[in-house]
Image (cartoon, rainbow, N blue to C red):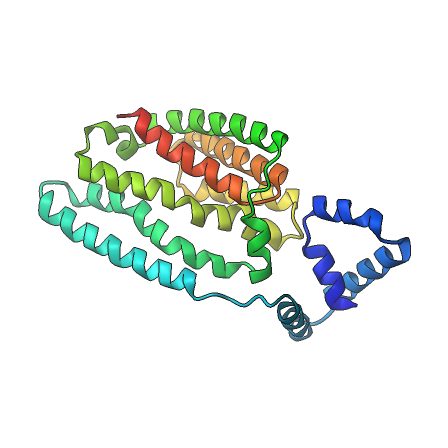
Length: 261
């Protein structure tokens, strides 16, 4: 029953609540007992159970994330060379800052390997509900608002209206692709290190680490990044997927650049 208990707890809390009425108390207790037994196993024994679960669900790690990442890095390399040739007068520091987001976007598919294969289908399902849409809408507005104020102090985004079309296209491409890496790491991988989702202490830790990772230069910037991460965490917890976090983050990043045109 250990693998069955693991499968039961891999379901999102909302799904478990819907399924639970169809199970008897003894069946629920047996599933929970199996999961507790699994948690007490050694790392080697847990790996055996997880292999059994993967075999039963027919889910294996795909090579597509690696292929997508390699293609992305190659395209980014071509763009970098083309930009170097067509825009030779741009300072090296500005060019490196410009390509930071596209590089992160190219590496983003590799972060899918941080997650168990059986979680991917659950995490990226667009399970829409009116409540989720409303929460995402207002959190996205809040996220755009914080990015506007962050842009006042960030040099490159604040100067995006003065970039040539090629440079702006590169910046925009990176802005909408890099969120995949950040959402997987900060809205799923780090929070679940402390326990099954939604783990509120895990999300709080991820919010702080997200803020530190963006190297805020002032206390105001620190607070704004905390707020931005908080909006994304709310979407993650409410929707129980990464799909809407990723969508909100990409819309906010792309929207703030378009507003600056």
